[in-house]
Length: 84
Image 1 (cartoon, rainbow, N blue to C red):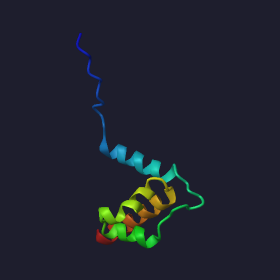
Image 2: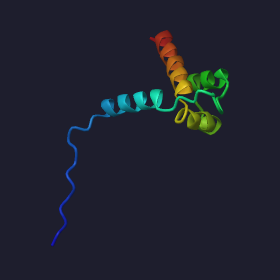
Image 3: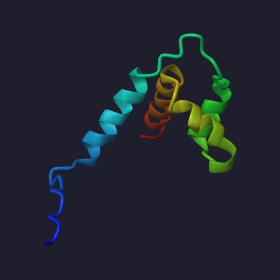
Image 4: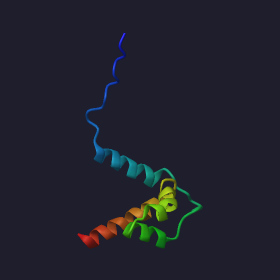
């Protein structure tokens, strides 16, 4: 007997997923003691000119530290405003 295919979500929306992820990373990891936080200069450098090999550790930190993630997003927004 052939297996049925799992139903796929036709209404998957990349923008909704990105918004969910942004909210999740902004709120779910408070890191009140700011353990392992990189200097602001590292966040700025990564926002201005990301280099995967150089920024891997900072990038990974952003996935577990909401304050740094929010600050990084603020830096990106500021750069976007300047450019736009």
